[in-house]
Length: 263
Image (tube, rainbow, N blue to C red):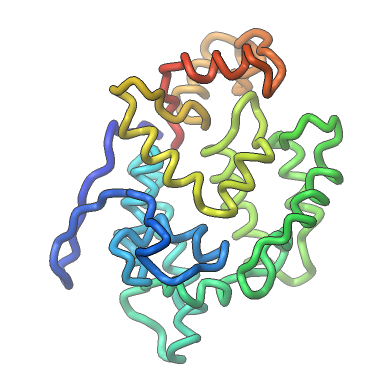
């Protein structure tokens, strides 16, 4: 799933074309939002409270996902449009738009419970998640640990919730993994929504002095790992790294210039 270098603008036949800027809104741009609303605000670039299917596609492209993966992301409005529509009407929206103000109605079962029913963040649930599944207390969750967590959270007769959890956590791992793990600070920023702006901005700055987003996993990583090492776990062959948070680790992050393929 190769990626292109920069996000594109997009237009809809039913409304005037608009340019996608992917700039984090300031507090004066809109009413205070819940963490869950901030989590999806990245895809509402015109701040009108509505996320169109093309907005979903453009947002995933801006985060570095491939065309094919971004087309697959259109399952999101397909499944989550009607739950958010229920706050306004029982009639489905034939344009499959997502309403930001009522995104809490799209919460599904078999999840982690980090978001409450109103879309607020429960930090104690995040702490419990890492206490239970981060066996080695590394501060990050591997793909295997995330898989065990997904299985542990499955509720009976909730096939839809199982599928949504798998897709959400699979996408999260592809976007955030570093050294094979999703780290707690990145995950918290993802829950809050701030991370998406940082990633999109980092990709735009790849030719400038500030390094681009360095994390994630894509088809290039898979191909290199299988060709050179016979495994998809490429991080196991990159050599030891300084402990997270050390001076050497910080200097290494600031000097890195490679932008990985994500999707």
